[in-house]
Length: 382
Ligand SMILES: [Ca+2]
Image (cartoon, rainbow, N blue to C red; front, top):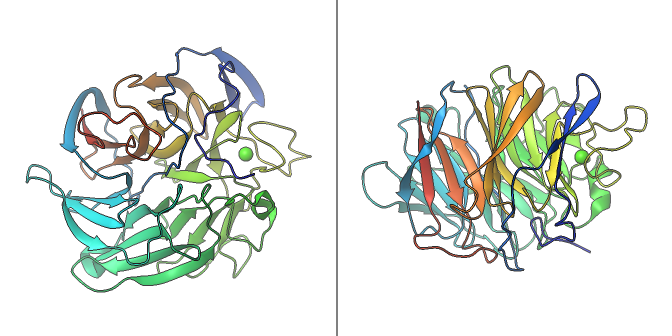
């Protein structure tokens, strides 16, 4: 049965952090340090957004000083930045792309993606600005249509939507949706199993994968299987992609009933779903275990961002921002921030000036809507 990604689970009592120190093959348990308010009502939930990652800013965002950049946004999902620092925000249910110029008033509509069929967790999801935006003026979006999930692009200065990749199965749940340009200039997309768990292990299916595409939507050269868009497989629902300064890709993934994951993504690796949720028997190295897991009630992670040697993970059901210190190819010292402050968090993104932007997701049908929701928050870099 398809299940939403940040549904109420039966594992509220499961409050244990399990940190997998991959380099040592050592699992250490750390005590949970939080009480998890989980106030979402049953219903559909969406995911997060992305931005160009051609370089990783080194600043440290000051999480004590929130600046509200926008309010009243209708289910913000994708978030990207133009070279001048303006933000583009994708609204899941309306299909609108909004442009926000910091300090210049309200966000304004600059494009409406045609053919968006918002239902459940589907709709207009991820957004990524071309790394060559100054030259090509292109903005990329991942969205649910009446037939499937697909990736398109449009010129911000006018023009129609060009679909560059389609045929990703859609469903009420598990649509994936994050897109981001890697430091190699290729477009990565996190997809979901769309409720068909067998697709995640099916190399011929784009579902339950991280895809790696050229900017024109073709399988990127150098992919593990020539001519295939698949970069990694065995995923359940990936809505967060971010690279560190060394070019390593980290991805967040929703668990089903027990354990959410952050994975170090390497080309061709199999991340285990549906054979394994969280850590498990790697079957002699066939499967790759996550770097860290946590109970779905404490996280249900959508977006991830990396800056200054730290990873930031936006949690929907967990209603907090997790910070993780990067130690080479591993993560350490998880700390929960913002509990009880902003509600559900969808997307986290580093702006060109090093500031961290975080979006709330309380209007998605599962949250307790607060005054001003949904909000776009900014935390300036110190
Ligand atoms: Ca896994």
